[in-house]
Length: 347
Image 1 (cartoon, rainbow, N blue to C red):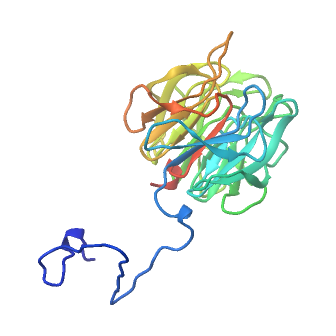
Image 2 (image 1 turned 180 degrees about the vertical axis):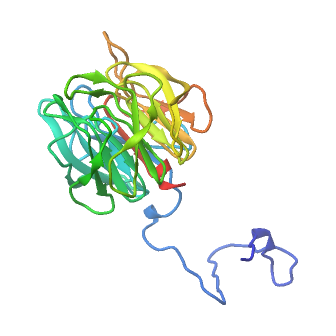
Image 3 (image 1 turned 90 degrees about the vertical axis):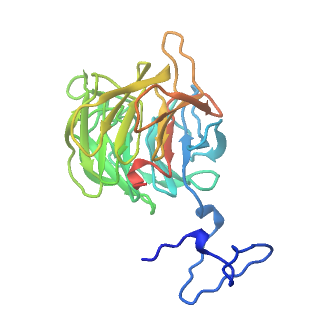
């Protein structure tokens, strides 16, 4: 293959480069394929979304950021169903898919809705989760599949080990994928294009027990999860993000913590300490591109909790404490994050 450099383009005499002004045409002696489709589907990726949550009332708003920059989030549109989604959003390079959740005053939700990441606007109905209604579920995804694992239903009285999936480019209800190694709720997931890893906090079957389990699946196949290793402590995390190499877990679920831990997705082993968030956080959310992990929202510790609108970020391939990114449009907890450039997409 020939190397093509811009400094090799000259005028016919070879004395100067091209001067481009006004309408410019180009002809080729071989083939030339121009971009097609609307402009919103062309250009760079790297948009992060944060949708849903509670304030404590149910929220359906969705914010967006450009992950490679810093600054405050902007309004994107609304989810189809206002609810606490608890970081359960899958995404491809074009579509974000929000699954399950909890509706204050109503109960558990099995709804799945979706948005087109590159444009702004409201979400549409996608389908339903299987096996009843679910909340506090974890997610992993690649460019094709969105996968949810674990969670609880019957208004939080029963935990499940079910793993279920959708093909994000189509519409329809979820299908069975396999089972986690143990049932649990408040699961969080990280992914490469090949492997998804689920953390988790508490099982309620047959008795309530805290756990530090990490288990993994191969995203492109069906089957049960296998043991990966352990979290750095028994307990909970509320938000997770990844590039193709590392997965990060941060914050807490029922308790507010500032710990960030990490794993190397391609290998098996226990999580290691990464650094700290800028606040003690429970029920926050997260998203990423290939370089940055971004954590957003949540609430501060009891007995006088305050909702957070803060957005923090870290450089995934380093270790250290988080840096301020900006603010959400509305302080809230139990929201869900996704992006068009996360580790499951391979770039």
